[in-house]
Length: 58
Image 1 (cartoon, helix red, strand yellow):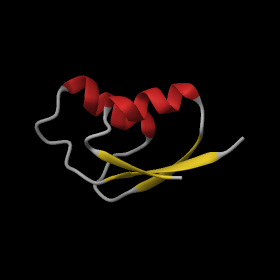
Image 2: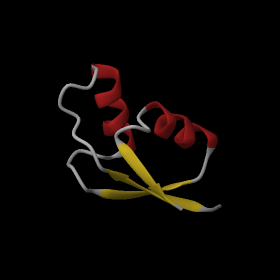
Image 3: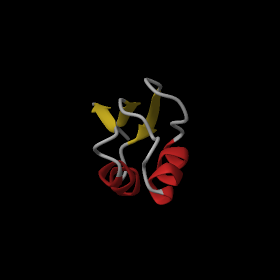
């Protein structure tokens, strides 16, 4: 399966608690960190929820 890289580009300070939990679920805990995930619909849904805080590198 294809993989995608997700980079946190904006701060989580001031974000709602559910968005902070979504970033934690993606493995993003610090700014400018990059994590790699398989390209599945569930991961895409998590990314869509915090699309304004992250950048996707395909």
